[in-house]
Length: 317
Image 1 (spheres, rainbow, N blue to C red):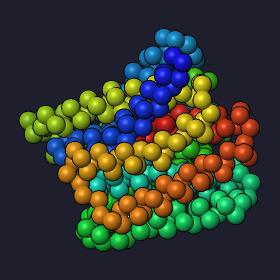
Image 2: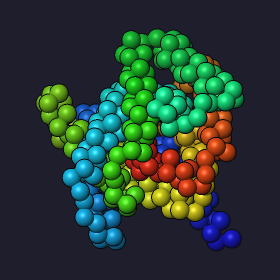
Image 3: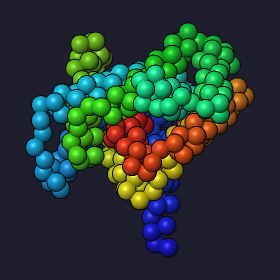
């Protein structure tokens, strides 16, 4: 009974925490340049994870492992989270969460292209087609994004971010990585966060960074993103992976967007249109179908590998 309560609380944590990070990001980028929001968050969280992993299970790293961490960190954090943070200036947090839920769709598609998965069955093909149709609805329908050019561009950037994350997830299966999941994730976060901070300097965002302009709301959002979103959420995720089927844990992929829509509506002053809810039902239903369709085709060991091969996959929020 006590274990069931812990499992329920851990699920509740990743559902609510990761679903709320989209609005927190929107708050943070109001007075902090986007690349510095994501860069600071992941660099600090990554350092803490690396320190924790090294204290628990010291491990000697190889040059290929470090190089792979930088490469994966670039895909997961520089491209993906950098894009999401930039787009948060123009795209409602709920819409951004829905677009990011397409990671499962892109991952399934890329696995087939790379030969990591067998030819998809009719059920999965239909789910992919319908899911991408829902995504197109989110990107092009004026009622969803108020017909603004920055909003539409931002939606496309978020969609590109989802593709980058999916590509990293697929490629991560074949790159060298430490045996410790926490260490691997910490290295990727640290590398990606560092790349984001460099990108912020190179792109000129540092010129817009003024300490005096940072509001209390943005500062608290950064604390939430770093300590709660990255560390608490990821710890709960790792704990669940050790006790629950990875496919069940992956349900956050279609619960988080619902939470993000509700949180944005209740606390962020966002007003999702009818088409937002129509599109959300289409996309979330498709993601759920794709995840459940992939379950029977994999052994328990393969499922654990596919979800956890990229430790940072869990921390895409």
